[in-house]
Structure formats: C-alpha cells, structure tokens
Image (cartoon, rainbow, N blue to C red; front, side, top):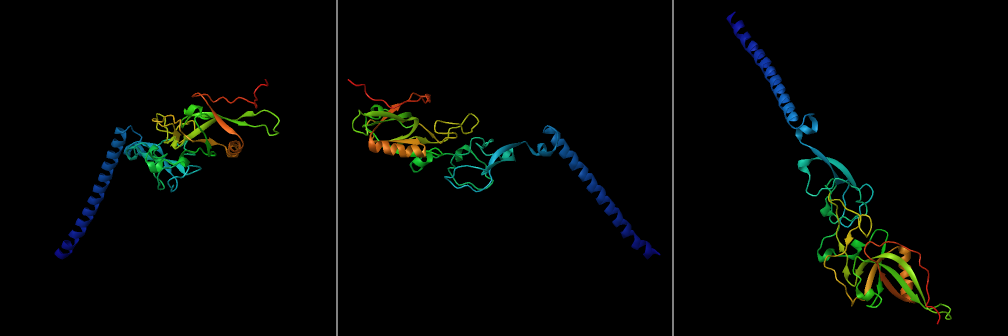
Length: 275
C-alpha cells in the first residue's frame, strides 16, 4: 500500500508542474501583448508598422542597372521602407527620372539617390556623350571669331544658325538662310557643358535647357574663347545632315540669343538690295 501511494506522488507532481508551466506561459503571453500594445500607443497608436517606427516610400531599382544606362520603363519602382533605414539623399518620387543616366552600377532593390545620377567632375567623366539630350545628335561646325559672334559664345548658350550661300544658278546675288533657331550649344572648342544633375529643393531632377531631366548645365567658370575653331550643337538627326551640307556649300554664322529667349519666328531667305 505504501508503495502504491509513493508511486502515485510523482505523477501528481508532474501534473502540477505541467499545469504551472501552462499558466506561466499564458501569463507571459499576456504580458508581451500588453507591452507591445503600450509601445504602439506611445508611437501614435494603431499598432502595425507604427509599433516599429514610421515608414516612407522611396525609389528603388527593380533590376540590376549598369553605369551609363539611361533610365526608362520599369527600371525603378517605389518601395515602403522604415525611416531609420533610408539612406541620405534617397528620392521619394520617380517623376522626371526617365532619360537620366545612372552614374554607377546599381543592384536590384537598391535605394536611388541623387548622387547616383549624372556624371562626376573627374576628367574621366567629362565625356560629351553624357550630355547629349535624348533623341539629339552632337554636330561640330568650323568657326572663327567672326562667325562665332566675336568668339563670345560659350557652352550652354543658345543660338540661331545662319548660312550664306552663292546663288545656285550663278546669276543671282548671294542669299542668307536662317536654317535653325534656338539651338543649344554643347561645347565651344573642348569646353563642354558640365555634366551634372540639377535638383529642386526636394532633391528631385528638374527640367533644364537641355531637355526634361537634363544632365548638363553651363560651367560656373566658363569663359569666352575667341580662338575657338569649332562649336558643337545639339540638333535633331535630320538637322545634323542639313548642317553638314550647309558647312560644305556655304559659310555658317551664329546669332546669339538672350537668356530665356526661346521664341521661334518664321524667317525667309534674304538678299542684299540691288544698288
């Protein structure tokens, strides 16, 4: 009998220990729930993401992007990330990014910042191709001090292109034609526009004279070059061939436009009045 009672005591004790463990686990769960709920209320209530900090939508890459790639299509997307994980300069809006050039290799899912746009200021980065607007062609023309407005045109200016040609029949006087108006000057001699991204107050790319989301602007330290032998313009593909023909068949002059003057007016061919 004594042996029977003795053998029953351990079983009873095991049950009590088991029930005590369940009660302790339940109590711990209640305490954890209460603590998390209190933390959520301290952060503005509502639980969810607020319990672990605020979040913000930022632009990230949806695929690997190689340096020198122009952004287009669905290369970028918005992702919701905790604010304490946002890198400095991260963009929050992908508007205006299409057409811009990525300056460095980027991994899939990487946050997109202003520093990863455009080109750096090192000599190895100052390539003309990085500032040619999308859909345009860079065309160089021979110039001298006389044809280049006294050599006072600088990279970033805008000009009208005029060509003077002899009459094709050989009987009439020479004629001057205004071939193109409001054309952007990419470079004078080897002095090019500065290939950087211009940003608004929120750190987003803004439209510039080059194009929407341009990568070029006039260098701060640029100066006139009266000894320049060439000037490079950004023109449409058809106009590139037209300029080549004008340079071959006549003499090309430039009319410098005032800053902010983009009016294009119809101008026909002109000749000197007969004496």
